[in-house]
Length: 308
Image 1 (cartoon, rainbow, N blue to C red):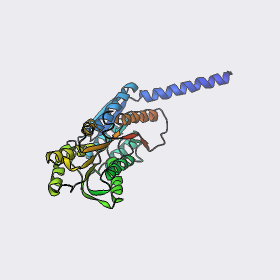
Image 2: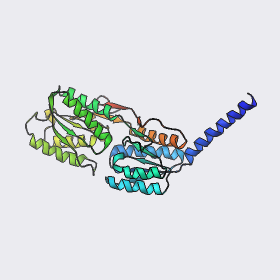
Image 3: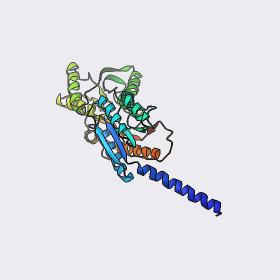
Image 4: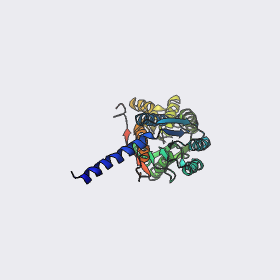
């Protein structure tokens, strides 16, 4: 190797070491979410924290307990405190004022199952369109393209809102399927209790056997609440098909038991947390992340694989 080559190799090694040290030297990361009561959020926040430890980061997890407006002020607070990066799990459009503050302060912001925005470096999430297509198609096929469907949605949160859009399109493509109720539950306590109450009211309004063919839920908590309502009403033998999204442990148990809750989509929550941490590390090391959205793979869970 020539002297010039040796010098180049040494310079390259030093540059790589400096980039790695820059990522690890960035010690203060704030994670802000109003949704820490949701199991999925808990899983990817925990995974993010685990990765943060390996990078030597000091992570401050801030839960605004369902208060989206409070998330704005907390983003502004940590921006003023000059953290090295902010990770959000909330609709970027709803906290744009806070994101503008972070931008003006030169603080990079990352979405962890949030929504795409030019104010974010990137958003790491599952492909909500694909998940909704799989579960809505499963529902339509199970009821043979005919019957009344109840939908549980949450349009205030972009990743979940996108699921409802796709499910709507699939059900509308089946002329003999009618969406009789499109429900947005209260999620302040996680969503199960209010979903159960709302499903109980729907069952009361549709008392005839066979009057409800399926329940499609944009995530598992409403599906579990609907299952509780159906079983409490003694209508579990009517063949009402329930699907959800997330495949959290409680949902997997219900699916494995062969209940009305038949299918859900397994998101890799820990994978989302790890991928978000990786995106933060790469950005802080000087890499330009080109993807505005980074998708983590998912899979359909039924009684055939619920125990895996």
